[in-house]
Image (cartoon, rainbow, N blue to C red; front, side, top):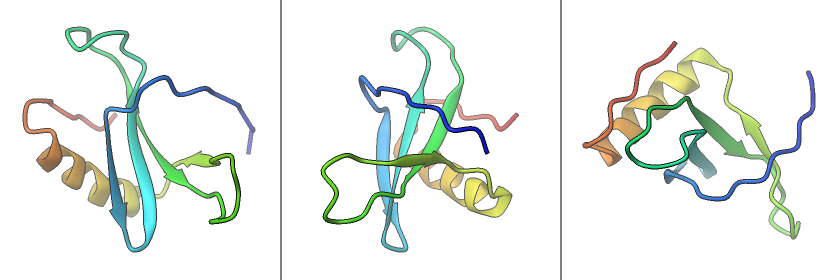
Length: 81
């Protein structure tokens, strides 16, 4: 797996499921712009000062999280590609 380092300026939404924290982030620069969104899972330990996130790639996990985020963001259309 390729490792990439990104800096998050703002997340769209976050949730916790089965003890794990997840972020929904987008590459859109503002609220009116369409963009790609990504769901990231917090993989860092409780005692770590820096957060470590991985892209969610498991299809079942992704489907479940998309349903949760769609409910949290009722004014946003989420489509899986």
